[in-house]
Length: 217
Image 1 (tube, one colour):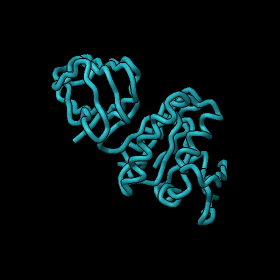
Image 2: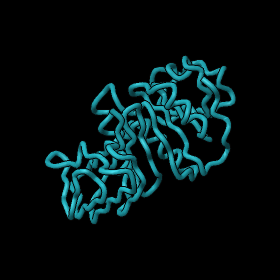
Image 3: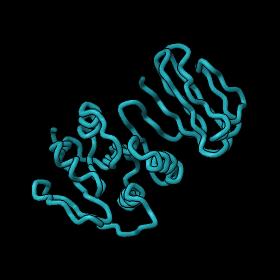
Image 4: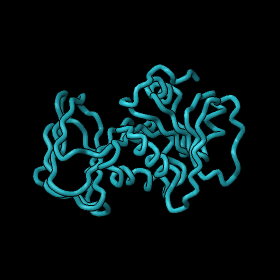
């Protein structure tokens, strides 16, 4: 797979490769092309090397030892032994310390359900520190600002996932409209909605933390 070293500007989103289910080469290649910094978590390094990906940072607790990385030099090795945080959380902390404002994350869903849930909800935990987008071959997940507007094609599947309780949700141009509604994780969510017609979708809410998932069947 080709190198990512086309963009060298920390204003572009960094890329974290976690250790969930692999995504397609097409998606990974698109993200690598525009990522100024590529971080691979400890547990994924062998899979990444096998795909011929050039990385910048290898980060983790290295409980199982450090894989041979001669083919990756120059590379930064970041040892993060803190067992109170996941390797993905440590990678977010690393980027925040470097003052990088945004990051895309792949291989963070699939495989173990507990890891998937934790990774998705961590978007909320880091909301005020770094913009996080988690992508796989079927979805793109990110946290919504209180007022959100974007052009979408008709029938684009969109799900609204509250983390906790979200109040005062209103929408425009969704097939199942919301009007001052409340969504609560585990009770009522905005899953499996879709765009009513080509054009702008507007979503606003008053309190809580609301994730948007752009889906592809």
